[in-house]
Amino acid sequence: MRLRTILIAVVLWGSVAAPWTAAQSSSTLVVKGRVLDAETNAPLSDTHVFVAESMNGTVTDSTGRFRLDEVHPGAKRLYVSRVGYANEAVDFDPTPGRTQVFTVRLAPEVLETSPVTVSAERDEAWYERLDRFKRLFVGASGFAEKCKLVNPEVLRFEEKWWGTFKAQAEKPVVIENRALGYRLTYFLKEFEKSGSVVRWDGEPLFDPLTPQDSSQAARWRQNRREAYRGSLRHFLRALLDDRLKEEQFELYRLPRASAFRHTSRADRMPTSRDHILEPSPDDSTYHLDVRDRLEVVYRGEPESELYLEWADRSRRAPKDHQTSQIELNEHPIHIDPYGEIVEPYGATLYRYFAFTTRMSKRLPREYEPPE
Image (tube, rainbow, N blue to C red; front, side, top):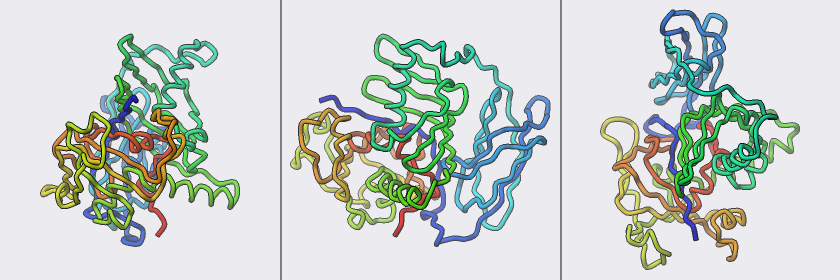
């Protein structure tokens, strides 16, 4: 059996000392400012400005000005992007009830790429690589079947004979997710598959789609809840809140010598939050540190048939629980209060987390599961 892995490769940032919810705080602030050319000080219009991982974004007007309303408390990353310029990220910690003003200067950037080839001129190999990219990046779940890659023509692929597969995007990649009701604009920085490891880095912006009727709105709510339940974010939020048992998670340490063979219950040792997690002394994040591989069992949902097919295990029946593994690449890694890993390549995910941590099941920071 081939073991597939994925590296967490999205840059995420620490936030407030406890997960923010609408019930906890109604105080928001305004973020506004201007985007200028770093060399000429000329205003830059039509520039994307957004809070990373959120639904809060806009584009600058003809004078380069922007305004974001209802920005919630907690440390954030403001991402600024325009074609022909190097992207900029500004980290800030908003104070409720106050307006924060930024002037962002973007440096012109010469793109060392060939012109985009129109779709009609692309060969069969490009379309095969596009299908491969979609399966690796968007996913292989049932939700992935309802995702449309709106602008595939912005993608370029590179494949080496020794197995490395890379993708680059000359413009943001746009994915319309009709399963969850979001239009995701992904500012892709890096995508690479090498051997059994897939990793990517980038910043997403979410725009909610308008449901056709109340029935579709209800399906989206149900699908979002399904995407959240048992996810890496669900697990990390439960870990931070000390609610693993209540959220139906079990946590084990798996000795590294056992991680590379078929494991049994005798190989793994129960562990707890207190043994692997502690508040950071420097900021509002938490330190997660363990030398063994972590095994996470979620008993709230069974395995899916699509997971068994993806993992080359279709010969057996689905189990009534989902099993995932996490191995740290850095010690410690930081977890922000939204349940996100801060380090771009801080951990490697195996098994069910590797299957579900794809764009087709990605949710914005604002999402909170129903009580």
